Image 1 (cartoon, rainbow, N blue to C red):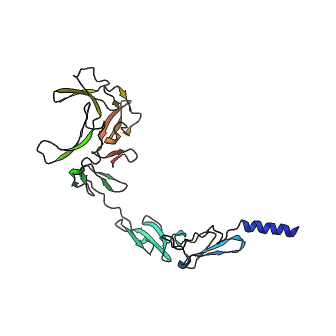
Image 2 (image 1 turned 90 degrees about the vertical axis):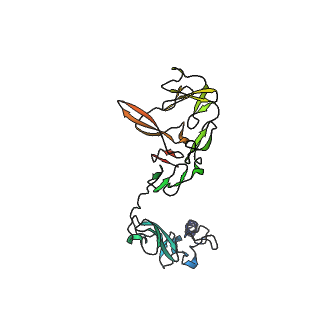
Image 3 (image 1 turned 135 degrees about the vertical axis):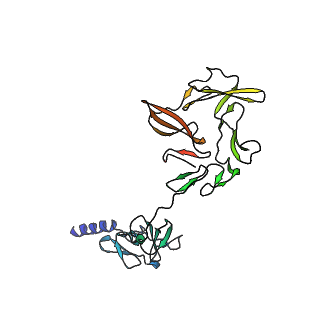
Length: 298
């Protein structure tokens, strides 16, 4: 009976053990010939079965770990050091290599710890032509019609690239006035629509005091012999006669204009006499408001 118990105990112990050749690959070795394979016996990485169902992993510098893969870069302290100059550590060439930032903030590779480098913040990028700098990346987000690292280069052929006209309108590139050599993007609206982005519904008629609701302003435009009118609504209101409210302030701050988010519109809510003053603001053409960063970005 004792022999049977000992046999069962040994069988259970063996069944719960991990072995190098049981298919579980406990040392996380790469498969020979696979793409980017490195953790191989030829580079000093081995798996060895130990007593009591344990396993030992080796590293190329003759060090070992028990019951976990051996990686030089996983050691404590990290061989590349600590601090803002350390970007990454990689096991390579039977040793390790560090990805560091130098004094100018540029990325460099080093076989020495990064601690000797002092990271300085790169100079703030100065964007031109209403470009908006993203403080996270220090990159300029350029309005339509401008390109370059600082939005310094005019590109008239790209004026319509990021413009979205509403109501099936079409973006066109036109001189800012007859005979001008400077161009701008404009939305050409279908009959029955008006506004910078074709956002207002228009009809043939004449303005009256009561036509536009909730403080909307009646505007007139003559196309050929026809006279069109449309309501330019107050911020937060929409509809052919400004009959629908779709936004009102509940707190101070900046908020997406859901009606014209793709046209770069957003709201500013300012606390004023126990109420809020609501303003509609515009990003530079082609940029959109990012509510998380509170900036106009691409």
